[in-house]
Image (cartoon, rainbow, N blue to C red; front, side, top):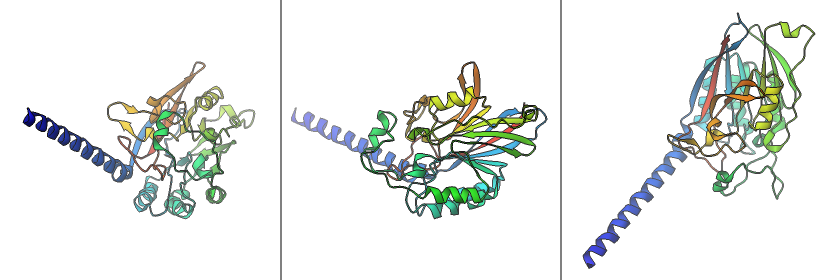
Length: 311
């Protein structure tokens, strides 16, 4: 009996050791490997007016740059080889007070192309250290008990603007790209409750007769924002914020979206439906992570290249 008991204890200890080792290995993979496995998701959408030439739109989101991220910088710079017709940046570019120069260095080649942008909360404020398990209890609060450290968002906006990228923060503007008029409308970060829909550009009395596409742009895909874009006549919506769930279950997917978006929509191209209209919604899983939770599991970082073709 003593031998049997001792054997059971040894077996339990071995099992516990194996489990602990597996946990350490999984964390190491998520922290040091997968979060740097940058990839490009490609999508095709036949939504342009008939006879239009194809448009390639590069969607960037949630870069969360911090100093000394050489691999991320090199990969972002290399995206310029895609020669996109338009870059759509849906915010959370920064994650550190000293990240502006590294961010602009990484994006410099892409600033040569037409672009539009909206901010996320981590463009305005630096993230704070908190219990990472709170992320799985529901959307994180935008309120803080202490003042948040402001990031150099104004300088970032200025550089984007000087490169010709259009600021869509609670405003709308039309941009002509390869013979198609893109009527764009964006909102400030819904996660901070700053979103105010400006409507889509009206243009002239005959503007509706010319080839055009209405595009909504937001950082956080809260349902109220998606509904507003859809009711306003959007033909396509871009968003980020979710990180694709960031830590996912293989074969199942995201456990959280950090907003009220259903988790199965936390990454990818889906159809958002409201009041009888269905609009393509592209939610990027993002490129980075908060510097206080630098892990990804079953959810690789991504940029998205959408090729838009005629109906």
